Image (tube, rainbow, N blue to C red; front, top):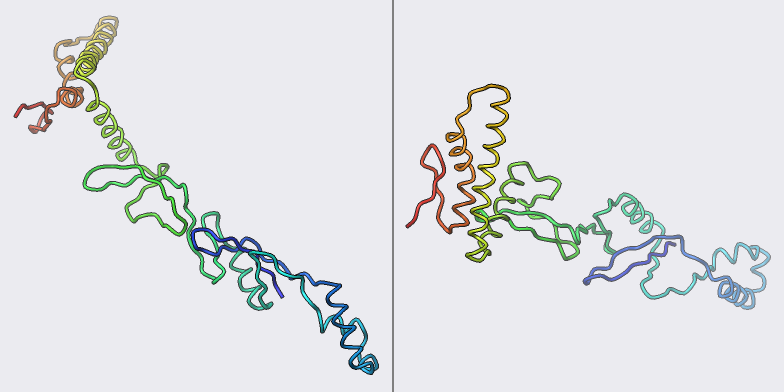
Length: 225
């Protein structure tokens, strides 16, 4: 006989442990005494030890416990021992996923959103991506989306500061490259380089300015409708 201890979570009966059922010595002895009293001659055929084994009374079960026969117990124990950290075994013998508190990213209608599994038995959606599984492209998309959302929440004054900071950063980058070129006595077109880097920051400037951004086949520019 095997004793199964289980807990109830979200209407699921989840097995917590499986152990050999414990006998109740006092109850077992009381039962054997009654058998002998009813039929004293039985001791001519069997020893008391044999009678104790045949008439074993198991300890009373507590809340969240259930006794099953050896075959059922061994079957469940075999499944229980092979569970991974994200699985639970039910009293019915069914294995369900336990991904509670697992965070993931999913892209729907072109927009990335971070979500978390809250319920037992809930599986990852087909297009869900765990944070550690995100590709570099996906990480870039999420970063751009997050930055765009941040910029969209800025006040007009904050947007002006962000735009000026983006252009200042482009100038500083060009200034550094120009100094390196002069030291190396290499040709360097500062204006062309500045325009190039300004174009690279154009998308951010477009978002800050509240203007749509499109690609004309060469560079990304802002347009006003």
